[in-house]
Length: 357
Image: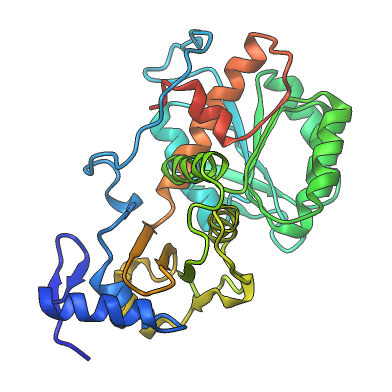
């Protein structure tokens, strides 16, 4: 393996220029990515790191369509916005990240959450928040009572794929607006449930605003320039925490755009990196983020191997998703307040609205 120069401040490793060029071209000519050369040598192409989001300049911006401006009522407490939220899945890492982001944004986190039967009766402590977890029993009466106490309540769902449809049916039956960030479930049935109930909801498997902006840009390119990359070969590598066994939905969405651009690719060709040692040494994931990261790299090569393109987006931690979720909550509260005709939204709608924090 070539000697690599470690740059802690940027969390990346750069090969000397000549070696980098050779590694890059070698990676383009192979049928499978060499993680040691391509990922470490080219990590700065399109990198989004949520762990330093507060200190890092934004990589992308999206033109905002001016939406209706609605002032949200401020509560007597300083920096408090009158939007009470219920975070279901609060015992998980994502749920806790959302509660922290909600506190920073001034939202009110209600002290109730739904969880599994094993979690029933437990109290989850997140900062100053103490949240009592209720199991599957009496969920409807509990939620109805909570909605009566907090009429502006919005539920945030980051639970498990197997609970998506049952949870959505519960929210719609009680009439509580919700933000669904949980992936999986029967998505067609999910949308039908919400449409039939007329409940307001933001449904999106990807809550990272900048990642959604990148996906939107890819979608526009695919729509306007179909076949632009005909004949090109594509290699895809993605690294996530070891607990994620399936391929990234974000990667699949990007690949779908490349396919519209004329690239032939089988989803089974996605190279998954789940071994922590490889993630540390080859991919360059910071050790503190092995348990929560999302690194993606897409490498395109022309038929004659003389032209190559590379796209990369890396996320460390969960704050980018948590902050996007809070923006979705505030967006949805405005739509409810204005009695908007449209009831089901996604993160693309949130981006188009603009005026995000």
